[in-house]
Length: 89
Image 1 (cartoon, helix red, strand yellow):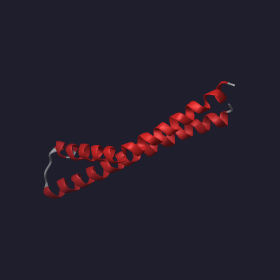
Image 2: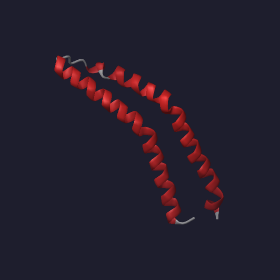
Image 3: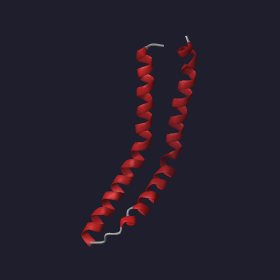
């Protein structure tokens, strides 16, 4: 196992993390900005008003994309376990 192989494993791990987290974070960001703009235009200054829609959107995104994300994570983990014999040498 070379430094290049270790770098590829680390890069793939970071990429998996970003691709799994990005849809959730982007949807929460869009909902948060939308609610903040609505609060600014209506002069409602309730701090907890943005929390509930974000939670619902994140739960909906998890339900919608969770299976795909877990399949990708399972494939990555299986790939890592298949590489263990090469790491030992």
